[in-house]
Image (cartoon, rainbow, N blue to C red; front, top):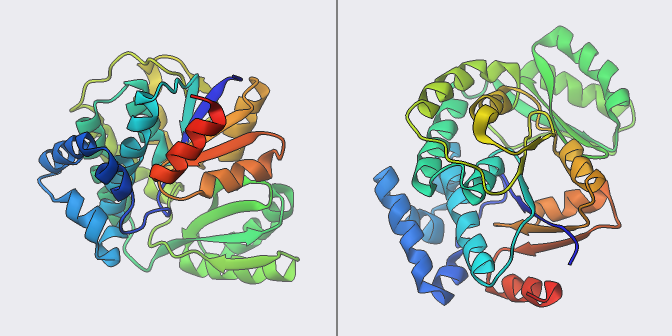
Length: 311
């Protein structure tokens, strides 16, 4: 088999009932939910499997729920004999990658992302900031649009997801102007995103500073699997700079396209998205049509992927 990369989704792919079929099929996975409940003093099982969706979609709840669901989906794959050569995660998903690598204990990671969600949500008052996207335009085409919109408030590039899908974060007036400008400049579709904070922008520097204090409370372990950093799209082989890179990730752009391009350059042709949804599968295929991308989000897709990879 060619070199295998595991990739983990971020916020936005959550849904009520995620990972439930895995726990039903493999009862021992319920131990992960018990550990999470104990770590957070909160019933994550009920939230993930029963909702309501409005509570699951709150950033402080979504982030631990997505990490837990992804680890649940990953565990039977590893138990079946899958061995990743490297891993990556989109935004929040980078924390899941570090759980796989062994950098963080599962319980510590759950606590970290709960705090991360709280700090990212609270740093900017609701209604003040948000995110937007102009589909089908390149970075070079968007730069003058961003500059023009910046006359109306703070606005920054925030996610480089794939060709033609670059998001921006900032103050609402600037974002609204950006949508107008990019529509006139020929975007396929420009819109405000359904998020309540300007994620991955300098407006969240304070959240990064608060997270640095949370990192002081946990122990980092030796990494068993390399991880690609969102902040610089480079391979991390040891934990020396992990904390700094994850703090930086909060208020710097997520370099997802560049991360996947790094992996492809390193010879990776097989990717498995592990966790709710298929967002990353779609993005990776837009970055390079020639690579193979599988996903594991439930028992059916687990079996399909095991069969396809002959594990």
